[in-house]
Length: 183
Image (cartoon, rainbow, N blue to C red; front, top):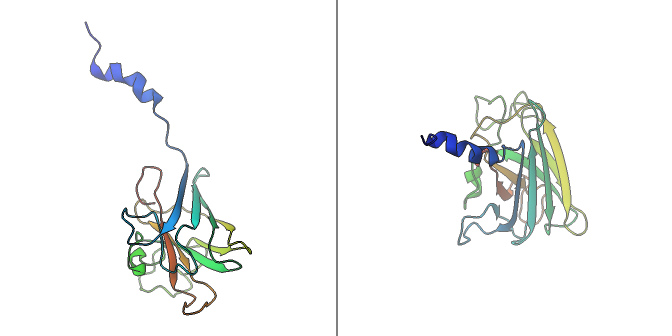
C-alpha cells in the first residue's frame, strides 16, 4: 500500500531551512520613481546619492530584544544622520513612511511627549559618516516590534545642510521580518 502524500513529503519539509533570528536587508539607494519599486529610496540625492549603499542587520536572537546595525557607503561625508524606525513603507512621498514606531504608542500624534518619544520606546541610531561617506551604527532595544507595524528605517537629514532641515527625511529603507513581512 503506498505511503500517504504527507508522509512522502515529510523528508522534503525537513530539508527546508529554519527561520533565522537574523535578517539582512542590503540595497543601493534609488529614486522613488525607479522602474521597479526600490528597497532603498533617496529623497535628498545630495546627502544620499543614487547608487550609494545600505546594509541593515536586524538581530532577534536574544529573547525580548532587537539589535539593529546599519552600515552605509557613498553618502555625504563627515555627516550625522539621525535614523529612526518608522511605521510606514517607503514611498515617493517622504511622509509615506509614517511616524516613528513606538513600543508603547503615544495616544497623541505627532508624538512629542518625552514619556513616549525617547530612546527606550523608539529605535534610534546616530549614524556618523567618515570622510569617504561610510559609516556604521548599532543600537539595541528591550522589545521586539509588533508584527507588521514597523516597516522602514528613515535617515533624517540631521545637521542642517543647504536647504535641508534637521528633521527632513533624506532617505528610507524598507525592512522585512523573518517571514518576509514588514517588521
